[in-house]
Amino acid sequence: MKEIGGYFELEKLINKPYHENAIKLNSGRSALAYLIKVRKIKQIYLPLFLCNTVKEYISKFDIEIKFYNVDDNFKIITNDIVLDNSSYLYVVNYYGQLPLEYIKELKGSYEKIIVDNTHDFFSKPILGIDTIYSCRKFFGVPDGAYLYTNKISDEVFDCNKVINKLKHIVGRSEVDASSYYSDYIENDSSFEISPILHMSQYTKIILGAIDYELVKKDRNSNYLFLHQYLSECNELNVTHYNAPYCYPLMIENAKKIREQLIKNKIYIPVLWGDALEALNDKAIEIKFVKNILPIPCDQRYNIVDMEKIINIIMGEL
Image (cartoon, rainbow, N blue to C red):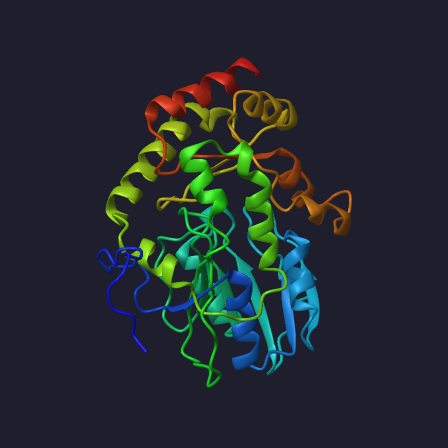
């Protein structure tokens, strides 16, 4: 029975999500699990340059996992990839640096591909390609992923509940990030054991109310400013950007620079660090893990913040 009267809940706000026509799920892992089920995938090719939690999550299914390497432009080394009727190729669009034309080429060559656009929220999907997006990488929400696929499940999924998973988001807004980091980790870890769920109502409301054009403008402005000053020392050839997740700076003394940035409360993660154990000594991915600094350039910050970051980096060169 519908409740009427009493105290107010979260306001509905406007409802104009960026990926309005996608399937709305609670996490990227759930989106992948959804595809494994509806596509009846029995074999999947994953990049070695990927966090272990994704590999462990997939291992819960009756599915064979094979691995491939990427080159210095994040493109797939395809020598040993052979797909059969129940095989899929999982393509990670690292830092949003894979050109649209390249993904189309992969589709033409392999047909059955899944694109992970976790780092490229604002790129629209290519028609006919299963594509996954993450919301938590781009916005202050406790859950959320978008999935584009033309294969719809008959299964009924529950809606995620986040009533006890907002502490780190509210805490950072009202206090600081470090005080609530453990709560953030706890929420992040919960997706490792979560079943497939629909996106929470809370996250749907927040994502419907964001000014996406302003977000894109701010991210692109910050990214280009960083690139203007850091491109000469960046070992990566970063040519593609569309309001990206971060500015990926690959530099030799990354560890020292990361430590200095963290001392100044500029938090730079090590992405896919647990992939090191699966890589051989000569793999380019080892250099990616150790030497890429994902520099924040999102909508929370402005050019003054970017100048601060640049000054610290330049001071360590």
